[in-house]
Length: 251
Image (tube, rainbow, N blue to C red; front, side, top):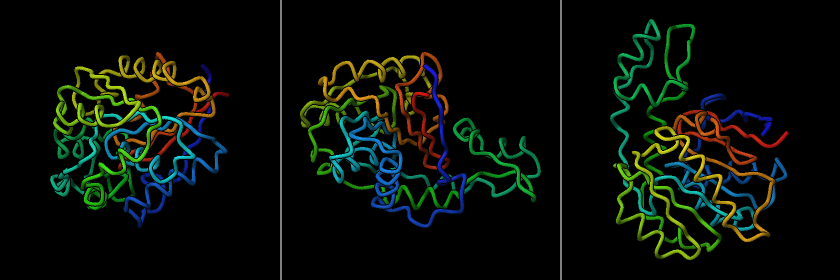
């Protein structure tokens, strides 16, 4: 499938964002969907992006025909203060990767060369602020809609427990659960199984919801891998906590 894409100038590829509130994220997503002229699109989100997705559906049900939520719960208690120790600048890319340690593999797409050395495309303190806004009980938002939904859970995830994701699936109508043998970043650990799971979900939707206007994806990981073969559904908006969102749709 041939695709064309656009990369809006959002966090990581623009001036520093000022609003990390829940409503700020939701308004960004709603505005982009409107600008693209999409109608009742399928929305996929990973981690913080998953909360964005189901809260977008709760606030703007007219924009969302279905949800795909990757490894995030209806109650979030995350702590990213460890990232405050990441360096601001280093003399070389190698030095930056070394100081990032185990976190480097999640951040390679956000590394930039600046006039004064190598650093990240975002400020770690902004990540901490963003997650602080994300933390909380969002059960009301999760249960506010009954459009078809697919929960994708990494069975080795330390972010989402099996008991919690099964409760999410059991308490919300029209919700399916897919479990893959990965950690939190399902799309990165097993991109083929993830893509297959995402691709087959639209086949389970009512005929009137099998639209081709696009699938909007808002996530947080190394999301460029989400569109590796065997290919993504048409129309993908990819978002990260620390980098740019990207939109792909059939050419």
